[in-house]
Length: 114
Length: 145
Ligand SMILES: Nc1ncnc2c1ncn2[C@@H]1O[C@H](COP(=O)(O)OP(=O)(O)OP(=O)(O)O)[C@@H](O)[C@H]1O
Ligand SMILES: [Mg+2]
Image 1 (cartoon, protein in one colour):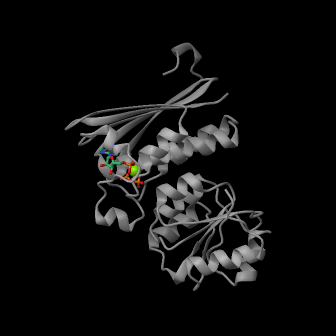
Image 2 (tube, chains in turn yellow, blue):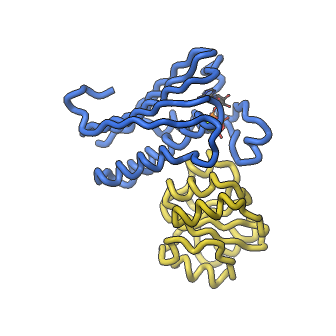
């Protein structure tokens, strides 16, 4: 499924469009510990987190993730938005919790299998 | 380290301790080089895990570091040499879950105590040396073939 179709299906808010709307997303990962996320994510994964600091943008960019979904309507720092723009990282947001987002993605066929 | 003759690329970088704003920027520069050299995506992916973890440890715990990237036909070698407090007990620091991260660092998602173990797991060769009160040096190899 393409990222833009997922955005429509889950009604995600686009905080920064970035470069990835046409990425084909096959998997995802949910986590708030950066060392865990950097080691466990795969290319084009969608990452669900409640972390709002600018370091999430570096992780998404270094690991070629298709995007970040901020759960629970978490509010990103200004630096985070700025870095997302500069690095063309797709930054999304939803009122759902991480758990609800994982369940919804799973219904769309996005797997968390490693 | 590779033999001087076989090194096809060598560059050094500087990391400033405590600077979260630019944290990850050296890893990003290394990634660009690896991409330009057409290195396999899976290898770049592994190189980014170790580069980011090593870079973040400098940002979190040290005052500054010099990073040397050396690429030979057989491997990518990254040396992180920092000036900082050093690590008093390396086996303890290498234990999964051990961390001295402050509350502020943990709020940012650091401090899982997984960085050094991840580097060791991901690298093909890993050496860590540290002198308390002086600094820490990591030598990390990722094989290309
Ligand atoms: N360059 C360094 N200089 C001084 N101490 C260090 C350095 N790197 C690591 N340490 C010490 O080793 C501990 C373990 O490091 P490690 O990277 O495994 O975990 P962490 O940084 O605490 O958490 P995480 O990497 O999961 O965010 C650190 O908490 C710190 O006490
Ligand atoms: Mg660390």
